[in-house]
Amino acid sequence: MKDHFAASRIIKTKLTPFFRIKGYIRQEGLFQRLQKALDHRLTIISAAAGYGKTSLLSDFFTSLKESAVRVAWLTLDEEDSSPVQFLSYLFASLENAGVPLSGHKPAAERSF
Image (tube, rainbow, N blue to C red; front, side, top):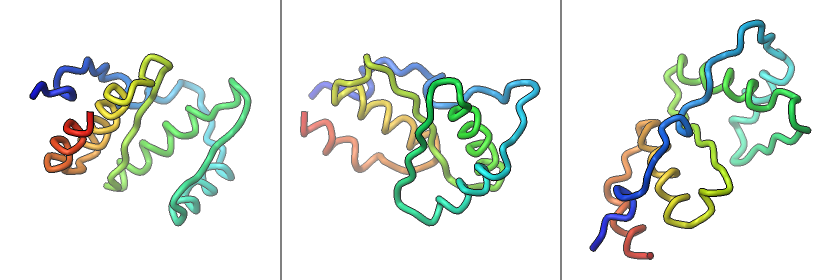
């Protein structure tokens, strides 16, 4: 059986947030709300383009990594909408975070 996940082209920059922008000022209130959101299963962040969602999340990601929290980053584009491509990126981001998935890949591949 063809290994769909290995065959998929993974763009590694989609698995890590960009570095902090020079002059970025942390929004402490929003940052603390994100810390409290860790107690929930799902948190949705919604704002118009240019309001700093990615900068905030990148800063939060870095903070979690520095605290030795297992955290994954995944940036998706329209081209990643096929199930195989999406799962390839999802598995890659989770593996990048240190989540062992070796037993799950064959089952996911069989489903396709």
